[in-house]
Length: 259
Image 1 (cartoon, rainbow, N blue to C red):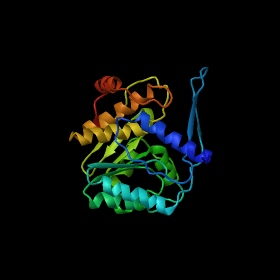
Image 2 (image 1 turned 180 degrees about the vertical axis):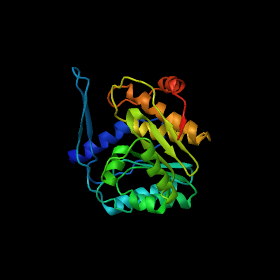
Image 3 (image 1 turned 90 degrees about the vertical axis):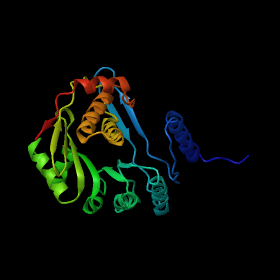
Image 4 (image 1 turned 45 degrees about the vertical axis):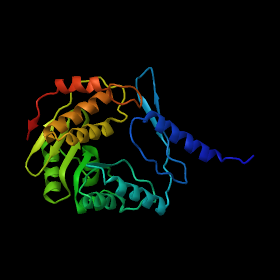
């Protein structure tokens, strides 16, 4: 009987788990030769802390990155929004996001960049929306940056330079800023007792994009993003938000502030 390498069996098993848990979401897998990265989260009962163990990601081949961009190009035919999120694996190339953004732009699709890996080339060309947290911005600048006014000014400069039509900066319990060429908005989050922050940033972007896809205003999209992220904090481990929590927290948000 032919043997099956453990690595391949392990990778295929992980893929099946993802597909089963997301069976209601249309998806297309882009297989690679190497093992995919694993992220393990452990909740410590006594302290309530969540410990995360993230293994290094694999180095992908250039042709695997090309295959992913080919799939993105085909997906753009039916898309209105595309999100580029998370860290880039080694081998994807420093030009990966700029090429992804260019594919979206040529198809008339709005591109939301939620990554600080190799983001500069894409921002030099310009994207629809760029989302970053204040700590990462301070790291890029080499010094701390005040909240919210100094951060809003930095975001406005990025918009003026053509890096993005919309710049969003998040700062945990202090809220989120949304800046365009015409306005600067600040939304404070509701008071919640967090159980786990895993997935909160991704949930923020998901809430924002879902509201935009329903042709609602940017103000509504920012409020939905903040409420969705806060709702994710209420769940344990890697569980994401619940619809009823999002709706309740949305009604509890303080008034949006214009800076």
